[in-house]
Image (tube, rainbow, N blue to C red; front, side):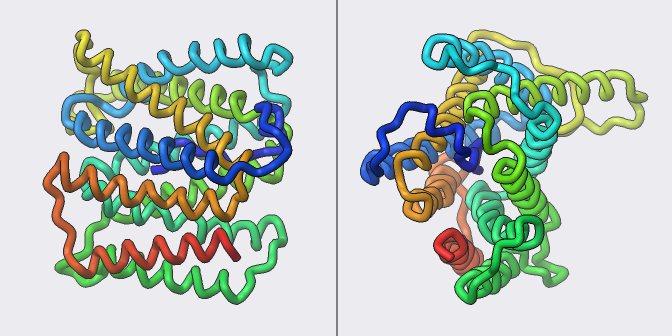
Length: 314
């Protein structure tokens, strides 16, 4: 998943890169970013049986927020921590938080590689929404990408009654939320600093996590069936805090690393290597969870990756 990567804004130029492209650096950064994010998502899948999602949201961001504030204060003193467009930034953060809720909910029921590949239909949704909301024109290659992505999703979903997995729709919903958030980033939040956007997102994690926790606590006990989304917080020891710290590090690497990669490298080139997340996720699924994917599913994953690359190069 793309755990949390922001489409670069005009404000990203304030990160301090030189004017020219550095393709080797951009590719290296996006690969390291995807490695960290995919490991973080594998960790969430691993601990989903032991933690409720809202506890992860709150504790991970409680660790991450001070780090982001420290970076702003030490490296970018002139940048205010409060967004210029609070309303649009808050809406963007809510969309991204919803994205993570649906994606993480899917991880508890899907192979990591399948969830990742289905989520990476997002360039297709960005293409469609850019045409719908921003007036961008979809060229023939873009329509080919949309068709390939649709076929790939069908191969993964297996819509026949005996093979259909409804949980595979959750990463699709996640991709829609991400695409809408990126359109909002492009149209309404272009002047926001990437670190401020990341800070706002992590604050949203804390607020939504605490609100969900309170609602669960107030709900009648008989109405609740313990799950990754519904339950009480788990006790925290040294190992648990270390896990949260590592998840926080993955989020920081993801939000900052992707901004740097898209800043110093051509977007089409960086986006193509961005799909390394799918490969990493499939690898961790095999190594950590013993996941075995059939040929049809692998074919669908390959089509989605090809479709995504075509979409970003349209």
